[in-house]
Length: 357
Ligand SMILES: *Cc1c(COP(=O)(O)O)cnc(C)c1O
Image (cartoon, rainbow, N blue to C red):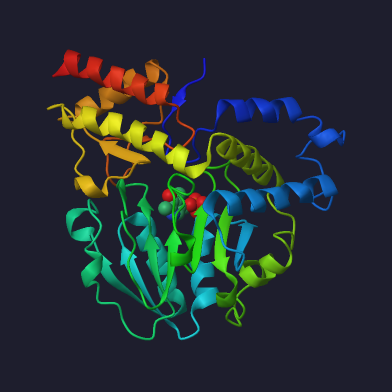
């Protein structure tokens, strides 16, 4: 029996994609080799990398003057790559809206004068700060934000107007809603939330901004080098890239990001409506900033949370435990979570409430 997996990441992948990968596992593209065995210089594989780039450009409407890269090290490595590629004046602003935004900020401080110019830490990250009144500094190289906050369940509904280059960590929401790439200098995202197995990270960067990485920037972290080598400077995470391409093909077939976003809004709407109409469950995020990807909630007590999670697992609703910083539950309902999974969760929540309220 396949579980409904609400993990925040690595997370559920589309069943038909997993089955396709299984069918193709021993013979990738007629080569007589598994995709896990083939050289990354083999034409059949380099075509996969090119297709991945093409599909990302098409789905996200990425302009030609942006590089689209597949790199390793997870989003956390990009916390360092951002200053190492962009911090020419040694100065950057960060908006801190959660745990990963804070980690990015801490990493930025290693390389220069990084300042937290706005934060929602005062209310345990349950909102996004007012973007009209952020005291951005002059002469900064970039402003860094985290557009969807995986642990606390918030998201930006609009993006700040900044004189400096806007950089966004979109790990937990990439490809879940339409975005205007032109607003950003750099977007990066670990793939293991919404796109592929762990191992590959997407970087979308305006080429004119990435031509002179800092002298100390490791070669592997130089976006320029990755771009010049078509993401094949060294051995890439071949299997994760292959899986990403299968998922991207599916997103395209399903009508692209607009269509996917409508389903995501519908799924999140079902769950939030149910929570809001219940006097048993609570989500404490300011409504307009609620994430449509990560939905944290609690019952009236920690004991009931525990028993909720135990009962859920028995019903095949797994990985619902909230992050240790927040407690309670968190349902991550990424692109690959079917509507039926959300409905099954709500049915269980109803039953649990009836038995325990
Ligand atoms: C998961 C996550 C990260 C960390 O990703 P890694 O690939 O594990 O380094 C960073 N930022 C956000 C928003 C995330 O959701």
